[in-house]
Image (cartoon, rainbow, N blue to C red):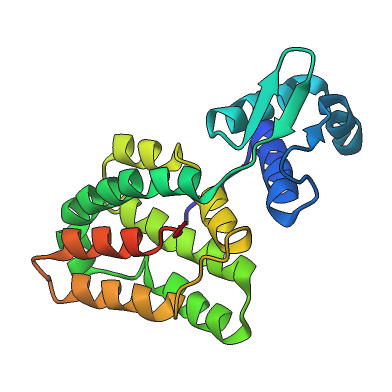
Length: 207
């Protein structure tokens, strides 16, 4: 049995801040006070600072001398830049994972099942969570740790959530689109890389 993944304190703080931004607790242009977060979470300021630095790398927040840290005004254009990079990475991942997933798609199926439920109940949070989990499992199946690390460094979950919640980027059916990819892996579709690339690009926000 796989042991549970234990998040570091920095990762927990990062998720707390991300959720606050995505949910609207901190709005674009609003200041995030490092000390206040540390007090709220009963931690030192050091891991808070580390989490904020990581989110600045993702371009989710920005800092300026004497002005502190603020939430960036992320636009459709900002989000659009991520999708071609992500699509290229997932195309490579799909091609590397094709044989493995043709033989066994069990890593992807629970996420599709969860997406059918999320679609029926219009649960946007679950749609984001299981969409990202599906694509993470696809990339993981490539067996290439560099590829997975690069994919994760794009902050896919954050920007998928922002696309849906801030810009209203929605798909007709999250479950059906992902089920179609599962079937393509099963039948060893020779175009699987291109299909995955098209799928990701189709999710990009439109200005």
